[in-house]
Length: 67
Image 1 (tube, rainbow, N blue to C red):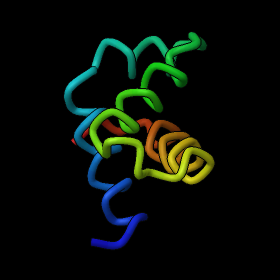
Image 2 (cartoon, rainbow, N blue to C red):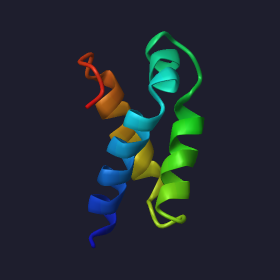
Image 3 (cartoon, rainbow, N blue to C red):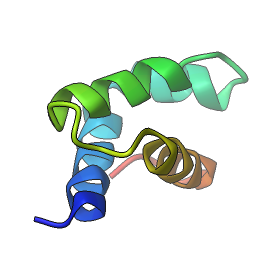
Image 4 (cartoon, rainbow, N blue to C red):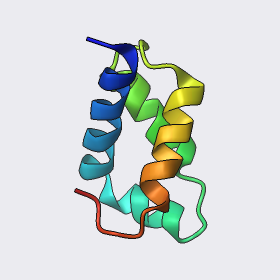
């Protein structure tokens, strides 16, 4: 599986599993590090951290509810 595809799937799953942290981030909190850590945990460290951060920020910038 492509590294980015795996990270994308993990990002989606983490945002679904931790809606409280999504709300904290969207309200100006500092939950991004936690969310990145959860993606790294799901991918067993295979996700590229800078890509993961960028992807999470893109997904979190979308104001629609998490899928």
